[in-house]
Amino acid sequence: MSDLKQYEPSFQKKDFEVLEKKRAFQGYFAIDVYKTRYRRFDGSESTVITREIFERGDAAAVIPYDPERDAVVLIEQFRLGAARDTESPWLLELPAGIVDPGETPENTVIREMQEETGLSLMKVCHALDFLTSPGGSTEKIYLYAGLVDSSGAQGCHGLMSESEDIRVLSVPLQDALALVDSGRIRNSIAIAGLQYLALHKKEICDLFRG
Image (cartoon, rainbow, N blue to C red; front, side):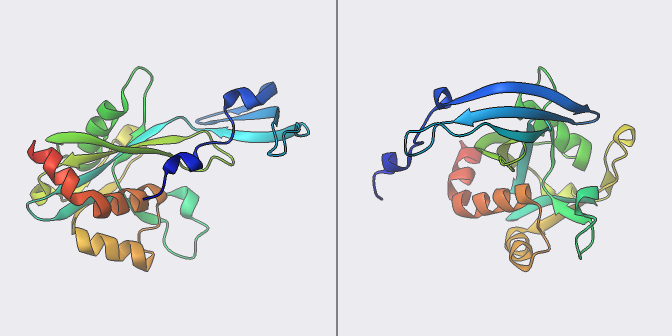
């Protein structure tokens, strides 16, 4: 492997400036309007740019893995944002949810796993964090791997207070990866999580055994 230091960021936070920030919309989510400028790669300063940024809040997701059965627990639910797709807006996903104020991301995935699947995580380990769409949103995803007994993955779950109607499935890992390849799984968090599990399954199983 080559020296990864060559890929470190060219600039830091001090190399951009927020000149103005205004809240344009506040509902279930929020939109802020920024005026900003930043240092260009040639050393000069950019012109002032105006951008609308979707303030969704951070979220946490879990890859519920059962090493005994080499299976993952997935959920299926309706997503309005997928309604313009040519395919069905009922998506296969990983259990996930918004991190509530004062809550840790790890506690979020433990809570969401119970609410969305009726199952409990026996162990949890951090996988990675990533930005879903930094060109227009501040949202960060905290991704975890969780040890689960998938034998009870069945039925429908979710909170009525949040209008959730969630079907729970136990899916062999190889089937889940095939569903990514076929395009049936097209939720970005699920794709990232399942590919992470495929790459790091041995390390995750070692952590679960530890």
